[in-house]
Length: 193
Figure 1: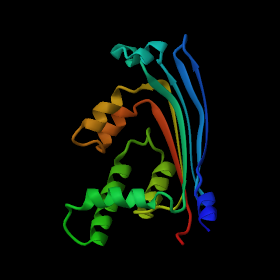
Figure 2: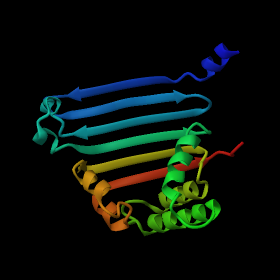
Figure 3: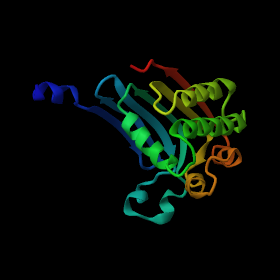
């Protein structure tokens, strides 16, 4: 029986990358993780401004790093529930009210952030998909697909400042960080068991 349980809990992964060091172009062609159950993660990304000097730790060598495109697909049918609930529980532990009221308030706050994002960043279909994802919280089952395309490429230096700001989910701050990018988000919910 233990052998059968271990067989079902294997994780398979595939990684394929290419790096044109002279041009500083890096491509994560595919990173796929086949997780236990019907769970999976897939990531592809293209970046520029990554010369070989970045490997030697030269601080300035990564200053021009920028993302041209990204595609992330996550299928969750229970695998991530513990991770999501643990993080959510920690974040909400200081909020007043019952867990249901805390979750309702968190959903409302998240919906406001999404609705206030610039339409140039997220179109109506993407906002609706994120709204469905939020409503399915705290443990959304289904497939989430995020595609980012940027021309010109998005400088990576924008993101540490956003992450360290006191309001990282402020629509204006998000609009600045992703200025010039087009993000498409789709979410196909799956029924909980």
